[in-house]
Picture 1: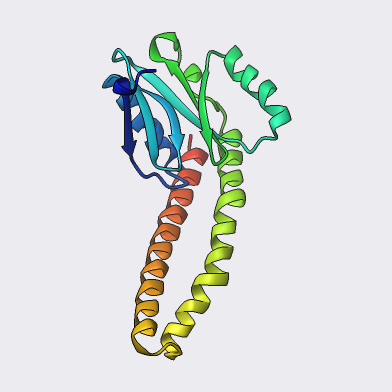
Picture 2: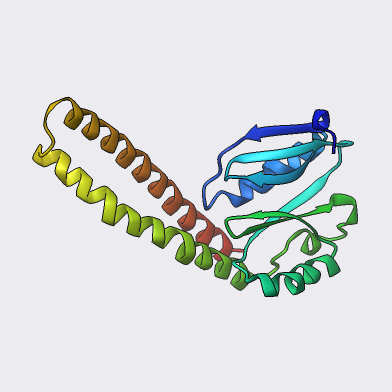
Length: 189
């Protein structure tokens, strides 16, 4: 891989935005950039290639290292190429030309598997985020309203924690709406 063929791009997706991320990666392939890796959520590394219609799929699958080879072999047998993984999300791709039916374009073909993945994301990622928020964020907001911190540093502390609280709250609301939307969508498929 030559460095002049490499392109890095910053793009943010939240826990429930994996379908949008799949579309983003497919679009990049059509533009002539194939995914190589994801470094820290949001930093994508692409290599230049011939534009091609590629389907990307993500699966949330926390795996022990000992189970990984068997897991990847199953997908390989169905024609999915393993690309990379980050934060328990595995990235797979398959050329559109190799897909003969709508069923072959999906990793999960049944509603229960999609709902199980959504439940796993919620339990493994969203609940810990909620706990951090409740244990760290809410007590800080309590301090802000009580005026415990005084002076310049207190004001700066209040502003910083206020901003962090609002960002966290917005992310939490966005993800909650995403979980609700995906659950509703999968149940009606």
